[in-house]
Length: 225
Image (cartoon, rainbow, N blue to C red; front, side, top):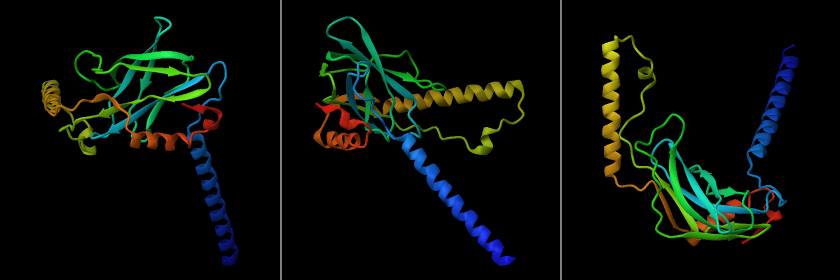
């Protein structure tokens, strides 16, 4: 009886391990980056190199990049989300032609605040590029994301549960938290960290981007500019 039970247990364990391997493989396959094949809808691919230097647990904003074509007044908005695991952002919806980046604006993610009105980031140089049909164009500039260090610590699990408070105590707590956030914002400003910069793309980072592009599915369907 014991021998039979052991055999059944071993069989169940082998099946469980096999299922885990299959599920893991499917998840990894599903998460792989995939470019569309060239067609009338996807005629070009613009690759924007992105570097993130992260000091907080997560970035609290995204970047809206305005792209204008030379043949008209239409503005195309492209959103770049800082992600330490991604070395580039890309757009497949632009038609062949000449373009330029006109402005970049940071926007807070849902549930976060940046403080003040959204203002365009400073751009010292004009960023112009040309897209060819059936080709991938890597921008010769790089978006650098940084976040200054915050002094506000994350609340401990026990602190996250609200205790019974009177209305007066709750109001005092709200005022205290707002004062702490304001002081923290001022301290972060004094660090003089530019949270978004458009800088020249150096050869070493471009080499990293090219290596990452090699892993993208359908990359062989496109020419590289």
